[in-house]
Length: 590
Image (cartoon, rainbow, N blue to C red; front, side, top):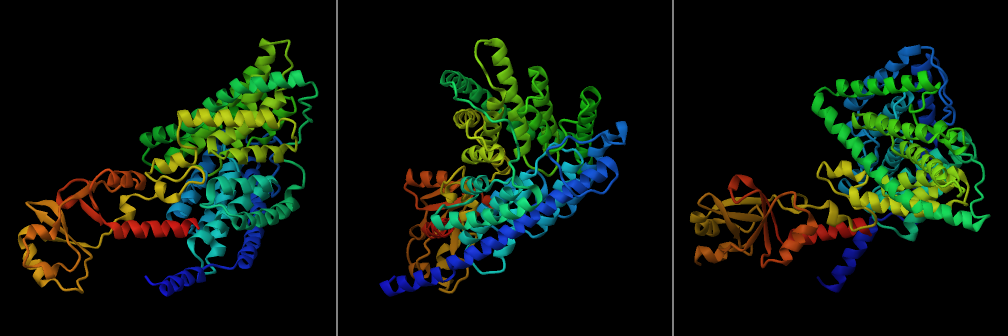
């Protein structure tokens, strides 16, 4: 390609990019939509909760307060069951991708569909998640608002022609804005987009996402106020440096314990999903039977403690822990176990909702229990339960989601107390390392990995994880019998439609015919017309594995198929397909 041609190609590629100013304007629009969407979503939760638990109409969501006693009495057991029936109908009818936390679906859209998300997802996700939470399901608001905000980003991007990389920035901006508006946490929202959603990070991308989070946070405060999510007593951790040192050292074993808990939490959801899917073929029976068990748990806690505790997002229970209302370590461990079971039953069988809130609940109860037990076993050491509760909250979120910086930033924003930052960072780091050692995938990416769809964990090159032989290969080929190869070369025209000709001999793949004008080689020995040195790979082989296999062999041709049998042939990969895949990935990463 000549230099003028290169310049012309570069200008054509850059012509599709939106100017930075336009991206900022679209980010502000996305932030407004996400902020308003957050308010409407919380109002929908309140409506569902009021209607299902009390038979009333209400639109103000109070996550910090325990649910009042329902007039249904023991009939409250069936409130989650009714909610499960409604949620299953919504997800089956409108949008199957609305099941679960929603974040895996956003990741899938980013890495496999160029950031395109169906508009109906906004409505379906909002309704399904509101009913799941409002009927007592053990899920949170953050996953739904991430998917809803991302859908707004994709919707806004659909009104302008732009390359995939800019569309993905707006999708990430929508997700960040949703988190920021819901939790009054603009830094946490920004960190989440950077750690988990943005394919590439630049000053411009961060600025675009930040503008959306600021806008959404400002609007969200009109509904939720400007205070932190959890108002707790101030932690004066290092006023006595020796006491602070003891507590920091205790965070080392606690971080390891939190990592174990995070691994168990990740596994529990998908273990429960496998068990119930094996028991029930019907989606309604699967989810309703699981939520019946959750209903029994809710009613059991009401009978023996006077509160529903494990129902809904659980913020009121977290506040009880942080304010020192709940101090019995055995009861705290009971709450931990019950919440993990309730969340696994809820999310593992088809509910719609997030994992942040259950993770915060698990971390708070585990941290407070650890502190109380440590104080009992080592009475000479002052151990503040609030420090370990806050550190546990951050540790569970960071370890389960692989969003380490997000967890640290959000816990600070949700408590507005910087005193426990060292225990928080220590716990998060150790918990993450242990979880990765035990379960390599996060609570989000494991869902995609089980479908055979990998995504990067962190800011990796997208192609090495998401591309496989099936995605790279060319299907533009024809089959030629070896016995007829010379005749085929003689009669084939330069305008022939098929790009490649796969040569078959004795019912098996023999090689690939030379594509460089084979009709001119018709007088040669047929064997000279075929590349027989090829690499056979299965369709699901990942890009990185495929490249290593090519480097370690002398082959330049890849045949994609399960075996050499012609019926197993799926496609062909040559230097042309590899170059195209690399170019597409470069466009995505810029």
